[in-house]
Amino acid sequence: MPVTAQQVEFIPLAIYTAIAVGLIGVLLAAAYFLGSGRDSADKHIPYESGVVPTGAARHASQVPFYLIAIFFIVFDVEGSFILTWATAWDLLGIPGLVHITAFVVILMLGLIWLWMKGGLEWGPSAMRMRGKH
Image (cartoon, rainbow, N blue to C red; front, side, top):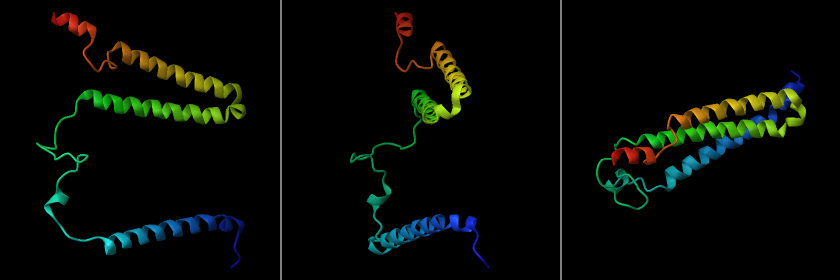
């Protein structure tokens, strides 16, 4: 059975996959044979940068932490889209410019709405401080 040109294109992918699977196997085998395999009480405590943990590990995180994470994801994805557009701007022309401008404007409107709703205030604001006095 003759090999087609399409099958020849998959040879580098097959080689790369074989090397990756082989490397993973070698590393797992090395960890298994070179590891001590002994169990101790110290292995079951959480490691906190060298600080001995105290109290329960389960606690509710504050909302601003989640807001920061969501904002990072949104604007990181926005940055990757804009970077992708910027690398091919000459091929996309005016329609691409219109699309990326609409994308940025929609995200900007979302940021303004978020700002107006107070989603970017993480500490005590001046208004809340005035209300307490």
